[in-house]
Length: 353
Image (cartoon, rainbow, N blue to C red; front, side):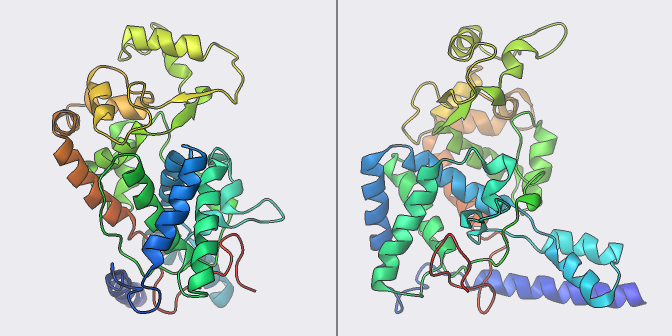
């Protein structure tokens, strides 16, 4: 009976969370900061004029911010009641996410913030700088009104457009999170060696389908990767075949030339070898041709369960663009804080004191 009441309480939380998500709206700042999107767009364009890295860095920053889970209510529960119920923590771990709350932007003097985790050390500084500069510009016009989480969401849409991708309305109304811990990141981001089941399982935790996952993977049409993230496909794939047999042979030779064994770890190469600075559907054409950089890329084509979607996106850019927009909107709702939750940071890199 006690567990049943606990479940009902958690069910109410689910309902309330659903209502919180519903508070996001494209015109959220219509009266409080009507020019926010044009202000952010100008800041993003200025940063882009300085370096192309602005585009993939900002896009990746948004993804990493939204995908990290935090099960901190289990800890609060333990402090309040003196013990921790496995049932509570099971549900809390599902229901309460760090989510799209700009927690990845926090800087810690102790080096223990979310951005300091091993999985986030490769996030390019230009992404952080893009959001920080945009926030400063917005604060100059609308102080204390627009969250860093919303500015990151707007900037992400804007960099997609700057790279030739589709424009879309961004739902707004997020508030900034109050927690940022490096220890919470491990195990919450897709790995380059993931198979289809592992990818689907991770994305499903965020209410994202296989179709959404394949569409979001298309962001790999931009950006770069360090050699150690895929070196196993070139030199130690299996005992019978050092090179991953799903790799196009010519592409494998190009990768080995760019990433010889024991290469400088700072060396990086384009994720998309054909159109690395354009947001398009060529990523999927690369998969069909055996030119997916990661195992987690190429498996989208080699697995029969996902291959039809890859084939569709490879030949129909409109289908890909539509699916990407839909998936980005769903991603942008993950674990959002609205209403009185969280805060509106004055400085994206620090919690308000």
